[in-house]
Length: 634
Image (cartoon, rainbow, N blue to C red; front, side, top):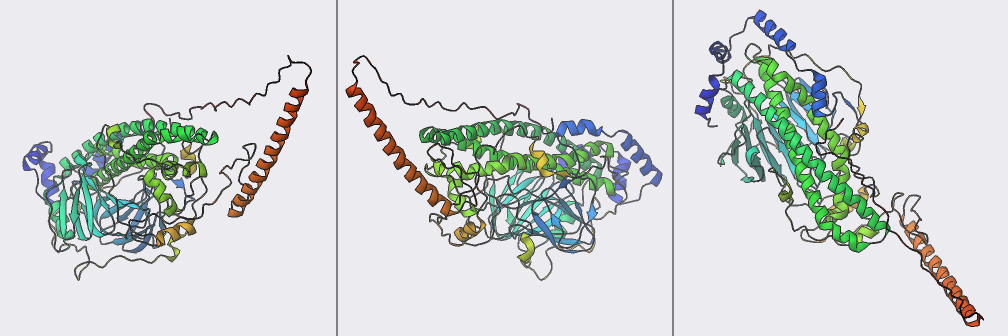
């Protein structure tokens, strides 16, 4: 990759000459100097309470009850995992489960293979770290991952009907794929590279998330640490070991660590601004949900239909903001991981006091995003299936039965651009090409034990050798060619695991409280996906009635009960018909009696008035409690 030499010369002036020489030569530092530096760094650490208040969540693990997002399908050598909300890594073994936000790290000489819930795989090279991404930051569900450092190779399964693109995040940009085989690398300075073996992917740099390029098979593209895309080049063979060694050969360690710290400072500001924008959108969507629920109770289809266009723009914009939040979060964590690794290998050069506050914050930002996903994006996806035109078309493919009132109205096409509501650049996931399949598509967390019958199907590399081959003679000394000499001590107090559901209460917007649907019908959704045909209307499935789906009787209060079988609907209809006939007959008898009394009345001044009951629309109480500057935990 070409470097900006002039910028690098300026950066080098920030470094002490002796430090640069030590970093380039690989000489060992004086142990007493290292220990002295550790003491100074520890003394200047940022108070953790202030950091917790800034980010809005507390550190500590989560008590997981949902199904895992991925598993460790294979490994060799020493592989470790750091759980969401924790600071330290622990050894992992084959078939161990991985959840959203967990980080998997392969040590020197080690490798690991991760199997995702959509049956895609990621092969992790040595000295590489992979984070498990969210499945709910995009409108259509899909697995995702973030390569924080090193090299990984992804074999993505063909997209099932109703599924979104597989996403891979790097600190410099992101990759969206419809089902293909490709590699991603992240060097010690944050430079990234994408190489496609088969199929095609979309690649966007951080400086222009709204302007991705399409990268075809046998081509590669470099992304600078600043987020700029270079021109695509031919990529006939896998050369990840050589690429990484050359990319890290001329890195100035001290200057690079400082650049990572500056990047995290900027990303922190962007995260705050993006969360503020999401709070505004969340208020709009929550208000719409309350109004739509009231429209359904009043059977006011005209009012509901009039609200749909603006509501669907807000839904689209929310998911675009969610994808941006996930990218910014992973970018922050990647810069922290890279800076930390540089310190571990060069503690005599890297000023840990500059990096430590960011390393601490990198534990908290992913937990805040996971809390936001649980409290906002998961219920937002249900609103997407109920009200959005594309979501409505995909609802049957994921087993969502739309209640009768909403199903009776066809959502209009979203004509306005949701990006116009936003003040920053966002990436729009590409439309994917579906392949008919009965493979499960989980709209939120997968079912527990989903991996019991799934077999590992990583694609064989193009050459006779593995995709990752360590160069026999290393040039890079920044990370790949330097052993660990430093140590990072945890700074947060050990805390007991917290239930993930508790985090939902810290979100101030009451989304998902008004309109509820029955749980997804997995059998019906599998049948719909298996029978899917291109350019055809998705096959219909039998809608199920759940205990939380209301059906009106003569008093408007009959609720579906039991197990919501189709028989209940038939019985309810029969009862409605019988009650309606009885009421009609009673009304006719009452009217005849009133006419008779009027005719026979001796007093002409008698005035009998039949007054219809006044129906007042329900008063809507705003459930949104978001503030202009929303923060979890405040």
